[in-house]
Structure formats: C-alpha cells, structure tokens
View 1 (cartoon, helix red, strand yellow):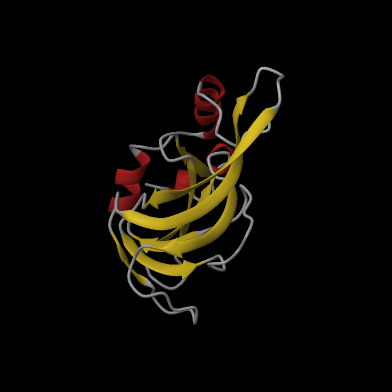
View 2 (cartoon, one colour; view 1 turned 90 degrees about the horizontal axis):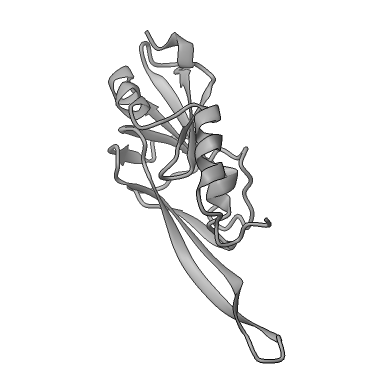
Length: 168
C-alpha cells in the first residue's frame, strides 16, 4: 500500500528533482505526481531563458498535455550565465558568458495534466511545481526504486560537487 508516501517528498540524486505523490481526486485508484527541481538542481542552471515541455502538445486550458514514459525527456530548461574564465598575472578576473540546457526526465509514466510554469518564466525556486503527471500505482512503485528520502538525499548532496552557480 502506498498510503505512507502520500504528500511526502522523495528525491532523485541523479536528476536533482523532487517527487511528491497524491491520490487523484477524479480517477479512482489514480495518482498525481508533482515534480520540481531541488536547490542543488537549481545550482546547475544560470539565469533561465525558458522552460519548454519535451512531450506532445501543450494546452494551458487544463486538458491533458501529452503522454510521457518513465525515463523519457520531460522538460528542457534553457539557461545562460557568467563564469570565471581565468585570471591574468595581475589577478584580474575575466568572465565568460556560457549557456546550456538541463533536460529533466520523467520519473513516472503517465499523462501530463498540468504544465505549471510559464515557458518564459525567468526564475524558479525549490518549492515550485514544474509539472503534474497523472499516473498509476505501478509507475509510482517503479519510480520509488530510484528515489531516496530527504535525509539520504541531503547527505548525498553534501558529499557531491557543488553546482556551477552555487553561492558557496
């Protein structure tokens, strides 16, 4: 029984994504999974240029947005930022503009019910839900095999290299 996970956050150490499952209000036996970036995941991106879905057609009127499979690309976060390039012999720091893309993979299979951010949204924080996916118990059980609880995730992050844009 999955009732012990309802409303709790689980984490993907590989993707730096959080996962929260709730019972679906309208589908008997169904679940809604919310996904967002963790603080550590946000450290890997600079200033957000845009967040784009990588699945089906996006509709913002509350209808289904597309079908996704576990492990497939779900969202693309395009970003740019400044990084230290080098220092000369007088210790003058030079900066370089870099850009990149962070592709988030779906942690479950299901139907995207809600794309929760404006594609041109310029800022996200670790509490923002990026997408909601309607799924089933089997898919959640499969996802939980790859996810960890918060204490384990935070310990994992402490020992890992910081992100490109970490403040520390």
